Length: 148
Image 1 (cartoon, rainbow, N blue to C red):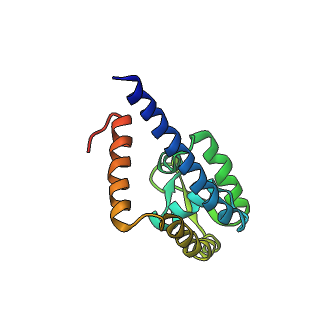
Image 2: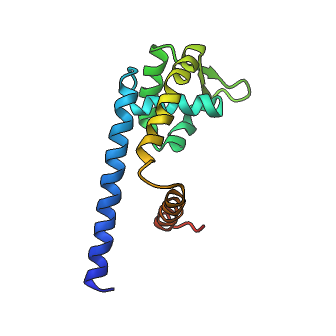
């Protein structure tokens, strides 16, 4: 592999990283206006769209270290957006369950969140988005040792 190709790979890494950071910061500003941090929003959104989740599995689903989940769940519970529910069949398992107040919060935020993401992506045509999705997915799968 030539030095030029290595430099191109490094440049791609930097461009992807900067784009992700810029998009993420923009989206997170909106989430903060509702008094949530991005991780709290991700947990609420997961529970809203996927239903009750075992606490032990939330971290893997939103890409968060398991030690941080307890803290985030505590914060959301204090705000009244979720509650812990004991598993009726296995007392070692506790579920996080979104409350009516949590559902209201997500239903208030999500349309704006979705619209903000769409606005940030309008720089690309639908065809370009499809191409980027395929290419970045391929990179991600390759980096994780998986295949399409």
